[in-house]
Structures are given as C-alpha cells and as structure tokens.
Length: 305
Ligand code: PMV
Image (tube, rainbow, N blue to C red; front, side, top):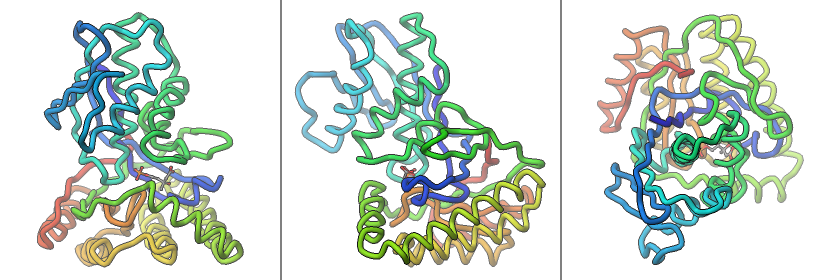
C-alpha cells in the first residue's frame, strides 16, 4: 500500500510562504493508495464515492480541481498509465491537515510502484507539488514535503525539509472547527496585508521566525511547557493577521483550560483545525473531551508519524 502522511504545522504557517522557517509534524493519518488495471488513468476516492477519468468529461461538481490536479501529476508519466488509482483518505478535506498533499503523494507512490519506477522522497514531494499548485495557487511546499517525508521537520522554501529529533514524544489533540477554511484565500489575504503594510506584517513574520527558532530548541530539548507557550504566542501573531475565528479561539481556550500546554490554529486558518500540545494520554483525553463538549470533533495523536 502506498502512503502519504497528513501533517500539522506546529509553528510558522503563513510566514513560511514568505520564505521564513516553519516546524511541522506528520500525522498517523493521511492517504493510502493502490492501483488496478483500467483502460486509461483513473482516480477513485472511495471516501468520497468518487471516480474521475483523466482528460475525460469534466467533473461538473466540486471535484473539477481534483481532476486537474490528477492530470498535473500524470504529466510525468508517458505513455499515460492504464491504471485506476484507488485512494482512501483518513483526514477531513479543507481542514488544514494537508489532505490534498497526502493524496497526491499516495497517488504518485502507487503509480510508481505499479510501473516499477523509483523516486526519492524529495522527488515524490516535487511531483506532489505540481498538484498542490492546482489546489492552492502559491503553496510553500511544506505540505507536499511532509506528506512524503513524515516525522518532525523544519521547512524553508529555499532549503526544503530538515529532520528535527524530538527529545520526547509530542502528544497532540487535533480539533476540527467544522468551518471550512480556504488556504488559497487566507494565503492571498496575508499577501495583500503584506503589500499594504510591509513594515507591520514584516515585523509579525520576524516574530514568528523567532518563535520557530525557539520552538525547534524546545522540541530538541523536550521542553513541552516552553513549546506550549510558544504556540500560544504564535496563535496571537496569527490572529493579528486575521487568520483566526471566534470558534478557533474558543477551542484553543477550552484546550488550555483543560490542561494543554498550549494551543493554536494549524494550517491555513480562517476555520479548519487547531492543535493542542499535552503532557500525555490523560491530559489529551481531557482536552479532547473539552473540545467535544463544544460540539466540535477532536482526535488524539502523537506528532511525527
Ligand atoms: O491549510 P494547509 O494544510 O494547506 O496548510 C497551509 C500552510 C500555509 O503556510 C498557510 C500555506 C503554505 O503553502 O505553506
């Protein structure tokens, strides 16, 4: 089975689009894919009861973009493979957990395996990035890189991914606000703010960079308390870029009141998901229950699959 990992951004989203570093961790959830023989290239997403043909009739619904993204991946395969790629997703879409990149990585790996091709993780990520451009406009590449590499990483546009070694596991609760955030829109909004007020927004990016540098040390030294404080600070900075929502704020507050070291939105914002860093299983269970008590979904995980 070919796999692509979902991810959470621990610190540094949005600033990463503008060349700053970010820290991300792969999730145990993501996408799994395999292939069966077909007449031409096809994509089946069982989770959404969806079957698309490349270069066939355009899908009239919300999946037209997925069809174009699949075609972007297929540009690297000549002749077009007579294979149906069957994908199963274990992440909500539009939630800021890198679902589209996980899907693209799983598709590339399944096709490569069937065709006897070998590619490095970096090459797979580069392929998935073609599809990410269709979905997201100007993606930094962090989602594709994490989907291919897994683990905990520091990412920068200029240098790509570097593995970070946590001194101890990072227990996380992921809460889904139920509001669909559009990463494409929030990335465009931050770009407009940066254009209008380069000094103010540049200073926010500088502050986020400092949070990321300190966060990396906290992870490497196993200082979860400090990492939690940095997450809270990062959330305030994201909120000053108008990326949070009242619901995300409530969820972060509930998580901290239930004992989390810190909490913040993760990914594109404007809805989507938040994460809360916890000491261990007992606190994680309390935090997840507090989020669920607000009528939201939550799952417990450990960062760095
Ligand atoms: O919403 P997601 O999971 O695609 O995360 C996006 C992270 C951003 O920094 C907001 C955008 C990017 O391309 O890095």
